[in-house]
Image (cartoon, rainbow, N blue to C red; front, top):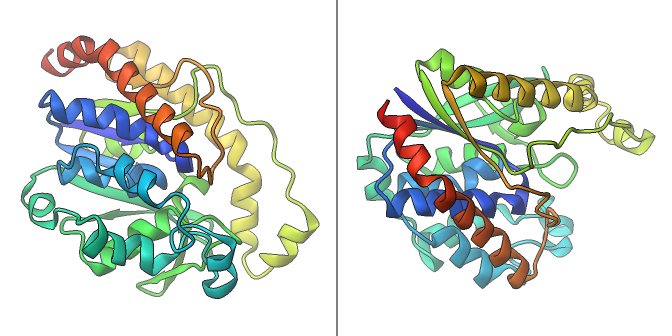
Length: 281
């Protein structure tokens, strides 16, 4: 099987969207996709085959207080309004193609973090039902600015906390060749994390989550090293920006959002022939 691994990164995810739209335009077919955070929330449009949708609704709603705002955070506990972003928008305002999503044989997974144990959870989302959209939301829900999503007795948040680049999971699932789309350049390494006293106090009920967040830089750097090691072995194809995308997690500047998306497209077009050769070997 051929897999697709999608790192998160909030609005850096529009880089990934640009890459995936080029894939769709050029009929790049894969067997399974594994999205983390924005990689799941935006990457689902690859399975529904909706070219341009991720950019379109982000441009349309980037300044809409219903989409992302401190007003939403105060009123609902979610910086990105849960009902608006994951239900109203895909159901009515920029319709998600649920039928195509269901019929596409691509297996699609979202990664979340169990905040009680500080461990990753992997969820297949075959139909994009209401509950599956809630799991997608959990995958992209940052601590302190999001209400945890309850699922099967677990409280779930951002999958990037515990498995930012799930290449090993993709391999264990059976994907012998994988395309990994990163949203940081090759030379990026996370610096050691300092968890503030305020942060620890606010999350005092979940010490394993705090531990996982503290250990995240070391784990992330080990994961990126693993990705590049696998690339040298020839079973992994890495696509990433050449330099830092320089965009904030909550950017609401339409020009910046489009710039990051277009960078993804340019990068994908540069390597398109190499991707086709990699998948056909």
